[in-house]
Length: 241
Image 1 (spheres, rainbow, N blue to C red):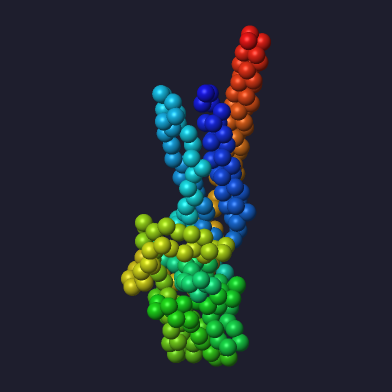
Image 2: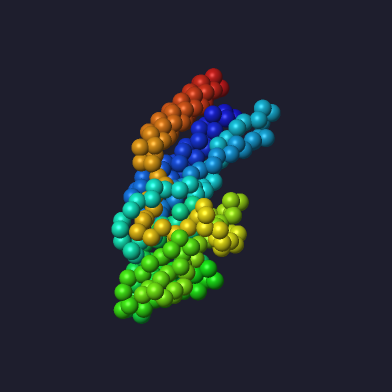
């Protein structure tokens, strides 16, 4: 049996997933706190023939944790996580970690994300302030001060490097390993009046997109060539039988 056809088809499957991933990255290149998706490809050895044939797997998607650019907004309700740290918010199914620190204050004083999820402190409890007591100040360690009174601290957490991350919403992630509260604010901390842009380089992503599209076309040409070769062989066998 010809191995070129299944090999080319496996390549197309892998490249299609890569195209989808790049397209999603480009679409969210201006989304605050968005983490880009990357794909790891493996080689699966088929033992179907005497000579092993290398196939492309469909690829495993993972979320990149590299930092994005921090941009000053001057808005006291914006905050960014500097260094290796994440904010924690209360998701529908548990704790979600995010680098999007844009806040809004409810009429009841709840400190919420722009989508309405409560920000959590280091103990996992929702944060509240007095909505009528004036502006807030957030220190590097996350401590919220209002009219000279300390009201609580925004929780900062580090996710283990070996953790597997799953996307939760646009800018949030969940982890299969427990996140660790940040206690040393020398390298990590909260920056009030800043937001973090997506860690996506649109120019690089477009370059990748062009490269993958060309590779996909090459795989498609290989499929066509293999099919023609197979059809010719079948026709020739039919004529000689």
